[in-house]
Image 1 (cartoon, rainbow, N blue to C red):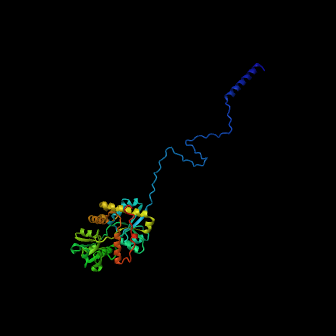
Image 2: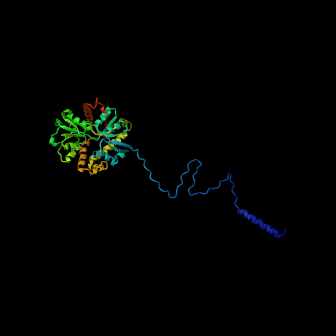
Image 3: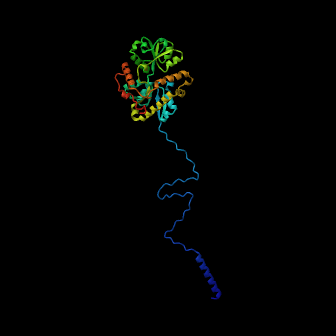
Length: 371
């Protein structure tokens, strides 16, 4: 080998050695690694232990709707009142308009059917409540209808006898020998009148009783009768407004009787006492507000009583004011045992009851007075 060839070989060997020193020696691993995943903006969750994937956020999440509160279950109540729409029902209208029934979880629908129909439906548990007079409770229970009087609305019996002042009828005893008009021989008017006669020591045969329907105002004005059995807050107010001087004998001045109030039935009392309490307390709030602010109650009543807005406001406001006199009580809603004993005595005397009832089953005060 000549010198030129040897020099070329030496140069090649030097270049190979330089290349080998620049190449790093690879590391040796016992277990091959998986290719490293590229990170994302929001890493995928590890689902290897079976947890559900988390929801993926958005860059600017929109606010969701505010949660809707779940209202308490509302109970629909159809409430028979026993009379046509009238300003005397103002406390009930107030309780609706001011939301007292709604706050109590109750939606009330007024039903102006006859009083006896309401009693029958409540007694059969087809309806839960009705507004009726006290005698209807005892008469219904005597027939096996398990109605219970749970709130006294009227503290005094609202029936009265009215006569023109010229008749000189100032006391119950003055009715002897007179012709007295009455809607009919039934209902609260007849029972209240009989109680008045009994308190005065009179019998029905001591006078002439004439059925005139619900035309007491016209019958008195036209002198068709010398006196008439009326509701103290109605006909006397109208007659006075027409310019007639009228004398009024109130039954409540001579005898205490169980009057108009709220009834339910034994099933509702036993199975849903909380509903009874809520119904009673909401109604009492309406009564209290009406007593405190009769002008407001009158305005509210216009939405419920047809033609009240066009009626003689002075007369209708006096009707309401006189009604309020019968509602006032030291303990609103409370029943008086004596009133029930007197009512039972009258019904027994009239032969409408054949035997005494257990009065403790006929009414209760457990839902009034904050008890």
